[in-house]
Length: 192
Length: 192
Image (tube, rainbow over all chains, first blue to last red; front, side):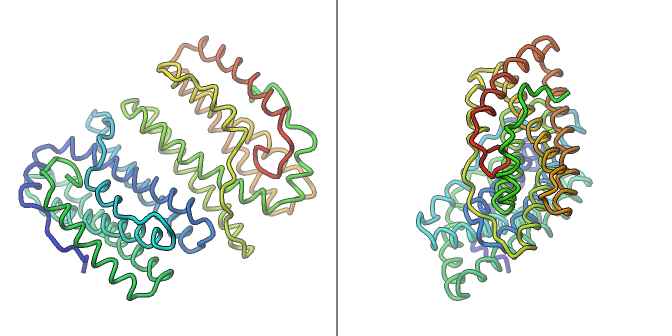
């Protein structure tokens, strides 16, 4: 259902579960960037009313997740670390075409794939026995939220483009995404 | 109490109240940019725990205001317009020094002054009889919120710098801000 063409590499969960603080810090930044990305997208398309409304809801939710993960860090006496960037997201974003309407379609579908991958990884984290119970509960909750965002992005794309156009481009981008995921080096980050 | 060294030009309220849709569109973008600015600031100083927490609260509030103003527009059948930029905020931001710790101090105090000016202008809008009653109620509510943000920025500055340093730089920047405000050409925008 998530349209992912390759599973996360088997080695990632070990790297992630052995470095929970690094994972939490990177995860916090992912939530922050998802919120900022929502703000950027609506700023680029202010006259698309439905997009603006969906992005506001997304920003609210991602900000709440960011707050929750920062709370987990601060509650452990740990400060947020500087953002070290996201190789995966950057690679994928490079495939967004530069001119509209293709730019809008690609932006929505790239965001959709990032949400789908996050959903897959939260599912893995929620089921990993090496991870503390309280954090597994958080990953379980976030899993559903990311799935909702994935669906929202696809529906938004289908509001502005024909279903065939959306499905064809999603198919192309999902193969590109799978190649990027296979090339990852199992870092203790959400998309490492 | 707001530390402003000059009142808004008398001509602004007439321009603003005669162009309520333009004002609402610009206002929505101001709330969006205030939220994004909070995200940028905490991204630059992730290891300042108190700053991170205060900025998350600010982002939540500014996003809620953005949502409310977009709702006012959409409720009137009007889409958000493209952001036309903010001459006032850009002029003021040019006075933020480039190196830390001065950069942090200046960023906090520039944001503080923008909140104070917004508070002053919401007060004017709330008391303007040419503006519809429901919008005046919104401006009244936002007035208190912006005052809270103004105080939060000063307190945050005093957490990281001595009160004397904060007061002296706020005095300097408030005179710069007043000069910028006097030079404005009474556009129907929040800081026009």
